[in-house]
Image 1 (cartoon, rainbow, N blue to C red):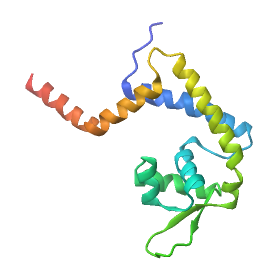
Image 2: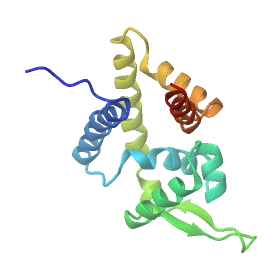
Image 3: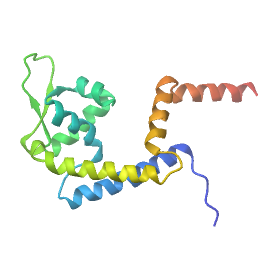
Length: 158
């Protein structure tokens, strides 16, 4: 049977399924109710302490809607709480006692994940981490939507 060539979007989703799926399995085996998508926010809160949604978005490189959605899930998992703020107009988020109690376990998981990612990079012709960084930089400079518009215009001009 001939394998159908997957589209770019399908390949990216499949890559994330393969990576995140296995990471989730290891969190579950460690007895953690934790998702990989929490990691950028969790790392910042562990390192920096309470932050606003905007600060978390700016520092993590994620969008504010993505951070807000992640925080909603993290609250359900009792990882974060609303923190007191001197400026009542800004809502600050902090780790809950439960979130803080996971520090050592998560740091061990993250170290193992980094080591596994490095071994994946070693097995490739071009390190995936570098390729992804270049792709992100390229898309930030010239968004995919603009590229699609140009491609549509080129098709219309034919």
